[in-house]
Length: 114
Length: 110
Image 1: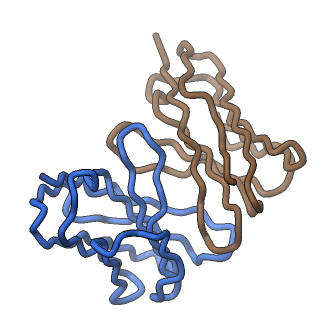
Image 2: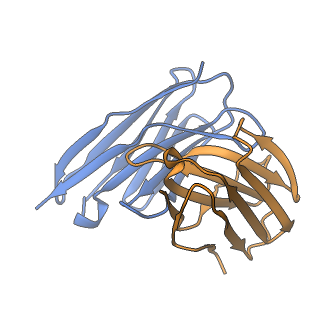
Image 3: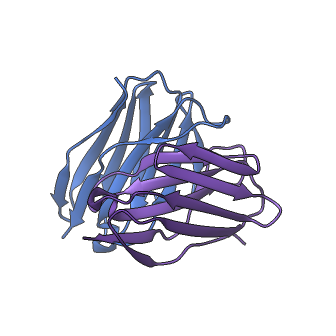
């Protein structure tokens, strides 16, 4: 199994809703990442988890809350989002954080905030 | 600051060769990656360079010069399915962070 899966594929939510994005990998990777990508822009790193511990938070607003319940799963909890948070949210994983490993990306969740 | 530059768009015909350049100025360097991204899809890994020189992988090759802060991705025998955005990404420290360039949209015409 060499893929990263993400659910849901699409999500529409209001500004008062609470929702969660899910990411899963079964490659034994110990580093997992959340990226945000706006249209025609490159991915921007949000969070890095290494061995289930948060190691990088790129000054992301607290309305985004990551969680890594185990080495295969990564969640992103969303609350009180703004319309400008509408974007493609990509999850990625790599063998670990420190070595010269490629990051495998999931297909993304396309989020629309109304 | 961090700066990664690549051309916005390139057009080439089927069967031709295209070279996408990437220049970078980052606080550190721990490797350069090239990813391909089709519209609405996730980026997929193409190549990785950490030492100077050329890495060849089938129709795709990538070159790195650390002293010049320069890399290129060479796509040979272009096919229609190669129409996509190509992202240059630099890992500037050992913490797993990738800094992405804005991407080069390659359009392959018949």
